[in-house]
Amino acid sequence: MKPKVAFFDFACCEGCQLQIANLEEEILGVVALVDLVEFREVLTGHAPEYDITFIEGSITRPEDEERLKDIRKRSKILIAFGACATTGGVNKIKNLRNLETVRKEVYQDDWNKPHLNTAPTKAVDEVVKVDYYLHGCPINRNEFLSVVKDLAMGKVPRIPDYPVCVECKLRENECLYDLGKTCLGPIARAGCAAICPSNKSGCEACRGTVPNPNKNAMHEVLAKRNLTVEAIIQEFTMFAVNPEVSK
Image (cartoon, rainbow, N blue to C red; front, top):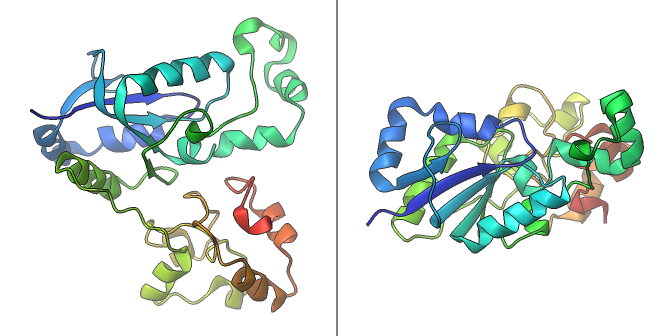
């Protein structure tokens, strides 16, 4: 029997689900391996329980926490996919400011209406247990296909846990620091084929930071260029609200 798979979204742009919906002919390979029972973007079906559940989006309201906990209870395996789900993503930037001020700026005269309530943004694993992670903004479609195939065959998915600098070296890229630019590559999780540095744009760690980042090496890289961790963090607030290297 094929595993039952479901997709749910919380606070996000749903871009990661669109990556999956846009797999076109490759989606046929996924359907052959799993039974897609719930996915608001592409079908209207529902099911009471799931073998594999994908969660997109961060958690920004108390009622969303309760909904997520309910989904977790009905899921054998739960996967956070996309930066909003895995780290809190762009939405977590609001945690740096007073939330009442944020609501007033966004909603103006309607800021205090109950349905516009908000709370500090949380990643999915700050609310429930997460079994696996699919990082990125948006996710990598090939990585998604690989994870689905591994799980369908009872294998443990292989998610990169090394820094983007490794992929840069494999692509023989010139280090952006040597070009007078800044980059979070030394501490950012790889798996994107170093797409941003390969196009001369500094990595913003949309896939989060690597486990146990080499803080000393990062400090040495910055010291050679008269930079500090704090200065780099100021430049990269899109996804790096709480980078491990700053601790």
